[in-house]
Image (cartoon, rainbow, N blue to C red; front, side):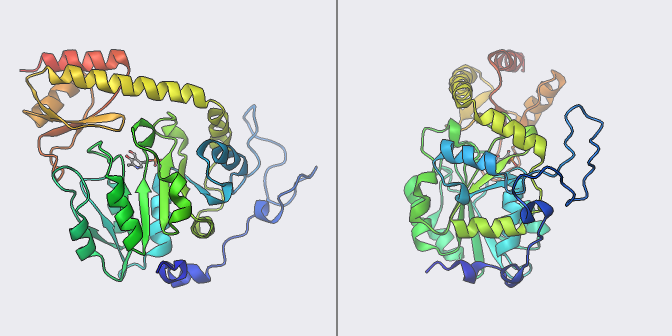
Length: 348
Ligand SMILES: Cc1ncc(COP(=O)(O)O)c(C=O)c1O
C-alpha cells in the first residue's frame, strides 16, 4: 500500500521549515518593518523592494481555474527542474535509495539524482519508445522511491501508452512522476483529472513550452495535498521571484492566445514533417506529440555541422541510446522551418 510517511526521508519528516516574514504575516498593512527590506525603494521605476509571495497564491488561483486542479494541490517551482530536484531530495536517501527512469528521456532526472548521490535504475524504452513493463517490474526494489515517466517524451516526441502508465500507478507504491512538459501539443489528455484516483501520482508541467515563457522559469507539480506540503516545506522560501509571478499571472489571462499558438505549432509540425519526408537525407521521422521532431538522417554529424555553418542550430541526439543517427529539431516559425528545409536541400 502507498504510505507517504514510509517514502519520506527521516530528516524531511522531522524538518522544521524556514518561516519567512511573509509566512508569519500574510495580511495587508500600511508599514512593513518585518523583513529587513529597503523601504526607500529601488533604482527601478517599478520597485520590487518587497519579498514576493512565498506560496504564489494568485498564480495558483489562476492555475486552479485553468487546469481544474485545486490550488492546494499545486506546487510552483523555479522551472520543472526545481520540482525534479525537490522530489528527489525529499524522498530519496543519498547512497541508499534509487529512482527509475526509462531512457532515452529528459536528462535532468539523471543529473538531479547524481547531484543528490541517488542511484538511477535505467530501463530503456522498447524500440517503439514505449515502457518495458516486465523489466520495470523486475528492476523495482524496496529502495526505488520514484519512477520518472515523460509523456510526451523528450527526445523521442511520442506519448507513452496510457494503460502502461496506469499499470505502474496501480501496482507500484512509490511516487510516479509523469513529466507532461509537452502535453499541450499532444492529442492525448493530461493525467491531471486522475489525481484523485492515485495518491502516488505527481504530474509536472511547465510554462517553458506551450506558454512560451522559458525565461521566467515557472514549472508546476500537481499532486495530493500531502505531497505538495512536503515540496513546500523543502523549497527555498521565495523560489519564484516577483517579476515572474506577475508576468505568469498576466500570461495566464491569455489562454486563447496560447491555444492559438499551440494550434499553429502543431500545424507547422505537420507541415515540417511533410516537407522533411521529401528529402533524401531524411531516413525516418518519428511520430511526435510535442513541439519537436526526432529525425533519423543519413549523416547526423555532417548535417548538424553543415546546418551550424548556415546559422541553424539543431540538437544532435545521435549518441543517445535508441536514437542513433537522429537529430532533434524544434518546430520554429513558418519562415524558420522553410529556411531549415531549404538549407537541408542544399546538403549533399
Ligand atoms: C521533458 C522535459 N521536462 C522538463 C523540462 C524543463 O522544463 P523547465 O523549463 O520548466 O525547467 C524540459 C525542457 O526541455 C523537458 O524537455
